[in-house]
Image 1 (cartoon, one colour):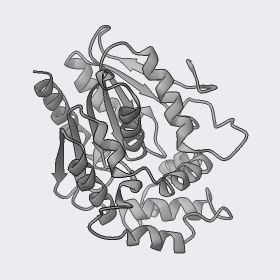
Image 2 (cartoon, rainbow, N blue to C red):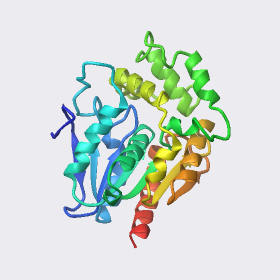
Image 3 (cartoon, rainbow, N blue to C red):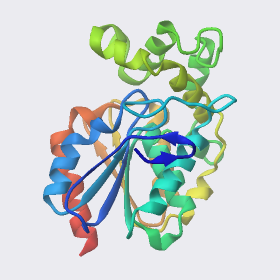
Length: 272
């Protein structure tokens, strides 16, 4: 396993050698395996897909820093991985992974970024200025203890977090295996969520991403997240918004069969 930002991270690579590289970045609570359907479709079209398990997820090492985790640690690991991948990158990300994809696209030289595809990046900072409405959902979550270190990472906290994104009762319906998998990384998840919710990266920061970008949002997702996606499309010069009727925040996983084909077709069209 490669050692990235001081941690051994598992990185699955699929697709033909020499194919246009795709860096697929998973969401909180999951792993690189969330992209397996996309990998099949993109790999079959000649793309070479790199799927890291972020720090503390899947088969990667847990966070070994001496202080509280911040999403910058995952970002630095991805920067090191990107330096080892040759050619113009397509950055693919969902939720937390979508935020990291955007941060990475803004940090890399423009010629290194071929395209960006993100499903509901949790880039809350873009709403700090110029947003059409405040973000009441985050205030309500704070009242429920979203940032309370006394309960952060407990099952009660994870349940509140999952229900916010997927609707009341989603945590209870997840099933014993799904709940156990999320609890295995709950402490790290609390820290990354906390660092995201206090991230003040303004919308203008992403205006420098000039590569073609496709931004997905779901009609059933929290209003604040839909605002994030709309704001990003306003400032990113080559971004397109795709709104999925009936989909929620986990649409990237629940509709993977259809979305993988759509992403493949869009990438092929933009390359032409």
